[in-house]
Figure 1 (tube, helix red, strand yellow):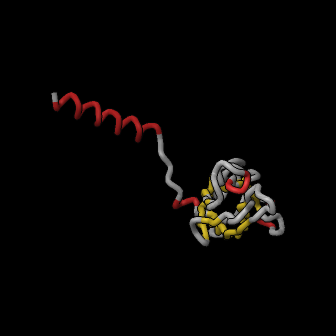
Figure 2: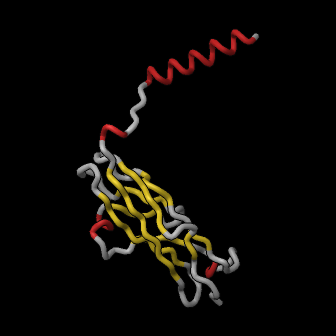
Figure 3: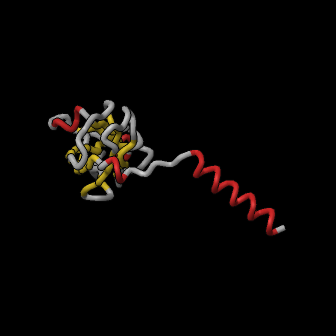
Length: 135
């Protein structure tokens, strides 16, 4: 018996991605729960992308974890927005599903933080120095 359809925790999700992100980059994560017993097929939630939109050729969703990822290496213009429909479905009889919208914005390169090894080294040295000063 399948009494409930999966329900997303948010009506819409937002994600941001670099214009040159590589294939497999995680953009955001969607999450749905099913009120059917967890140890039954009806309570097992999986995810897929609605393939009807152009965005489905660029982004995908991890079937088990709900990670929305880049399907290809990106080469997109900054400030471009993609709208992706993600489907959560169960394995009950009959299969029940629900959808949510994921809006993905391509970031301007100037707002993407870049960290260098020197920054990490400097922070590590400060922490080490502080530790020795406290003793």
